[in-house]
Image 1 (tube, helix red, strand yellow):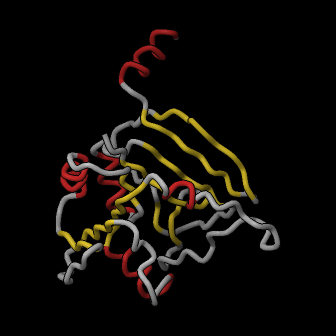
Image 2 (cartoon, rainbow, N blue to C red):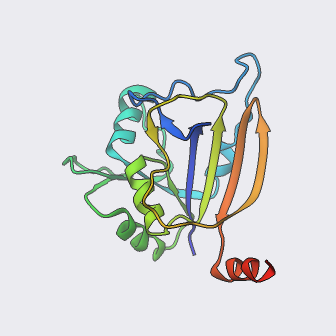
Length: 188
């Protein structure tokens, strides 16, 4: 079955964007040092990307205004804005968890949750994210758009991979199965 993967970067203090929604701080600690490209390997197993309107709008107005950077993927933009869908960009007004349930029933590769915070938090609340690929950027922002809000149920995770690259800590966590949690509690 297709996995739902959150692939995102955050500041050390847990923000995915600064207080103005900016992401120009997404870089390693040394601008003269090349940072390893983890995106290219990640995207090979993805054919669907989900995002909110703010993420979509930032991509098309700031980050890549001349071309849609996810043209090889089926994109879903969850929004109240009425916009004409294209062949590979679908604008939908749908609960993120309902959309995930529908997509997981279809054949395909894994599903990438690209942003924004409200979609991520809704999916976390409903335990819909299977893997968390989080790159921790060496910066403290102090404020901004938080990746993790309070109010969701505990989600036990297992670290399966981590490595450091130019001060960026790339981590991959998977959601632990109920049997793993029970076995861990039995050992105590």
